[in-house]
Length: 133
Figure 1 (cartoon, rainbow, N blue to C red):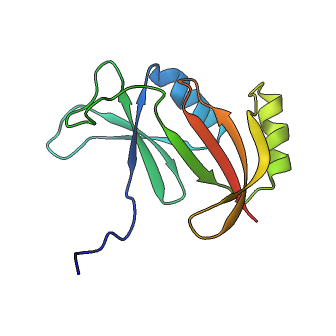
Figure 2 (tube, rainbow, N blue to C red):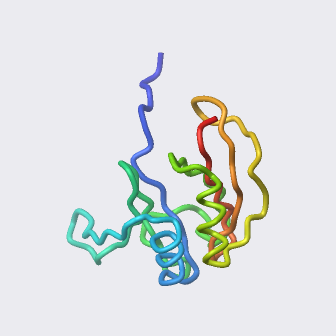
């Protein structure tokens, strides 16, 4: 049997405009911004933190190396879990003029049924906000 993967430590999101991306994920979705210096003392980096997860940010025009073969903004489809009722999210998103593309709709999550809302971040990435059903 091969060695087993146990969890995702972080993901990397390429952003066309870091400031707009930080605003969306922090001010709209409630994540916190973290600044860190990678091992080796290279330039400061930014990460979006929530729970025990983080999303590192890369400027799509100048991605941190190493990076994906084709680091482009707008190519991510991510599902984020919430413990808040989706009705609260609908009201919050409406108050910030964020369009909901679809939902609430039933879906299958990694550990069971979820109900989801779909929206887009400033780069057009698909963001699914889901509540366990």
